Image (cartoon, rainbow, N blue to C red; front, side):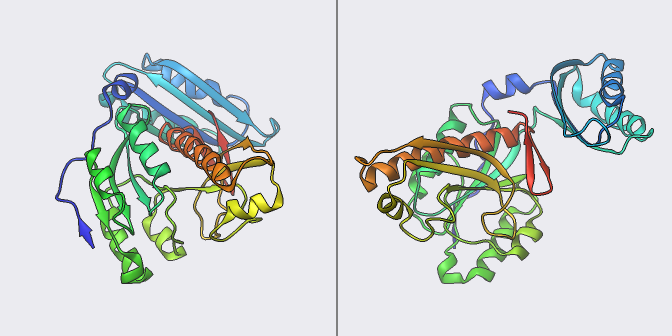
Length: 304
């Protein structure tokens, strides 16, 4: 295993910081009933908070599941946020069956990106981050190959090589846990061509986002685009989802497709597939980092 010398990950861009300064996100979910929005708004307005955006969804107004995302701004937010949290706990305990999370959006989520040899998703995320399009701090890039090391270094991001094939999965995952625990808020698999064990997923304890082509499970294996060409597919796509112990069956965050024709070669289809993988993964990462995705069982509510 090789590790880059210690360095600070590239901070959130000035554009992102300016947008998030004195802003907080509030996610509320639970059983629907009358008065939820009023109760939440009363706490926020009592502190002079300005609600910037509010999205809500109920799958059944008669006691169904309720989901709400609120972004609000407030001067001196850091000092007041603990008080708001205590008041929300008190208010929502009054006959409401609800859970909530509250986050200062000026503090970006810390993310580790896992990659293998294919670099299109990895480099796209690094480029978008440098352009200020992803409100995260990239703590490190971890790879089982060294092919992308120089390019990652050029972005000022720490690169860590963990040779999974040489070490074996158990030893590699132990090293991954050592690197990640306490240092990241979520992980992105940017075409990381290794299967994570259920023990690793449970031990890590933070969300993991994966990207794969939407042919699964119809065209599994090493050459899905060639198999798709043989079948004469007319659409290729990509799916970003949360990782669970059930391979490629976790809650879906985002999907998209592009059209192909009989005239497209396998290389054309692969290129179009890579394009849609990049865009779908970047949306999923941005939406997750902006607290727009609420997990519910094996599904998601996405306030995009």
